[in-house]
Image 1: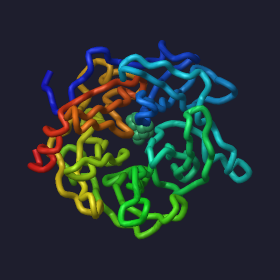
Image 2: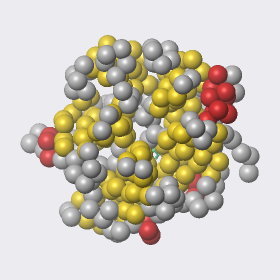
Image 3: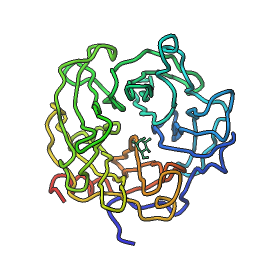
Image 4: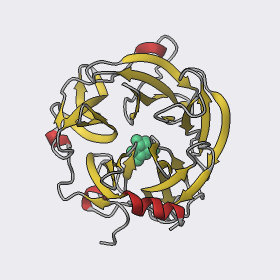
Length: 313
Ligand code: BMA
């Protein structure tokens, strides 16, 4: 197999529907963070049948070693009725982005509805319960990713405005807020084509601070006459002004090749919502959704990835 910067863990897939504590058809794309020395993943699940009357929910998985996870059978995030008196803008509870800001953990997830996804904000401090903080982006914006600290006195996020079909579906913009609730000062940052391996869609994950810049794992698609390929790449943003791109990989860093990525609920998919970085260990870890059906891990050298971004490799 042709290897790129991220390398698959031999224990993949780490979490599959058969390992889930409730009946599951798919265990999908996960938010990721460290909490009290443990690795925590927020795993989106498409249930087999209905569980507590719902078709989807987001469950907490915790691990001491980052490989063996215990999944909570009770979902952390589930359908919220905030929009139900007009229409259901929370019909499909998946794809959480998880950002630690100080001692608090913020979850942004798509509120899927008739005009496409809006963005719902929730907060947790213990991964046992969430506080619903409201809708922070009009549809279609799927899914804004919060920076983990204020930049020049303002919260910042990477937005993902999109339209339903056609070339150019899905861009990355940046915006700012004094309080995480009211957002503005919007600016476009990346379109499909910003890297040669995404020609149709491009989307953000939660940025991670490194001494060389904000490391931003991006996901996106390349369309061929035969299929669509959902892969991962990386971009480096300026620490002081994250609206400046200071590097990007010109090759994908992970693309579907393993059987568990090539075949599944949606075949040909490697999709990430974030990454974990350990600068002392020179390591980047990406827990990713494979074929929209199971959760896998790929790791790589942080310095190799940063160098690839800086040298546009
Ligand atoms: C995206 C989202 C993800 C999914 C991916 C591949 O548009 O819907 O949830 O993993 O497509 O199907």
